[in-house]
Length: 290
Image (cartoon, rainbow, N blue to C red; front, top):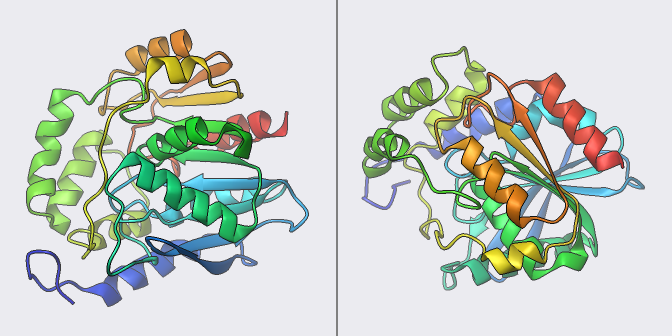
């Protein structure tokens, strides 16, 4: 298989890396596919069938739903967990040949279709990074469908990127390659030891042949955020190099009526959600159980 530039891409290697991380999930995990107007969504599901629904969205790039492996077992004790691979990003979902998401409205419609296909009239949502940006826009669009919203170091929701972050990410974005992904993650995470299977998945996702480009767009409007009357948990990576976490916390606190903010010290942006599993799991479990 080739990527958008015509270069060869090792899809088998990506799928093997994906499955190796998924092996860290609870044994009873099952995979389901959901048709949407933009293609087929791939969802990893676990937890009691009668439990309240919890939808997990990963960050962009090579994160995939597999990245929730460190939290899945704890969350699945009390919730029916649905972890979704993002449309237009590396994963096991497939894109439609004639219709691709190009706007925020398209992404919101895609997530609505996923929830419809899963039979979820209402759900809690936890999301990281780019996935949190999608989740927040969706909550503003369909507040009656979202019971509670947990945002893990969300990008482009309350503040922009740091210039240094974009500068370091540029080589990886212009010419994706495993070595460039590895170097970028080493810089952003401060050189901490990363799960080798998770790191291999990030590297294997470099150059993933997506039909559409990731949708980027505006931050949610301040007036819309002021009207979002649902419980929101904002978990910030204390060592994030992605954005100014103090600015993110201040702006979210000024705009969201029911936000609770917590800092995860010593954790970088890209190490979430698999890093600090005990602290992160405790925060999520307490928030979702209220």
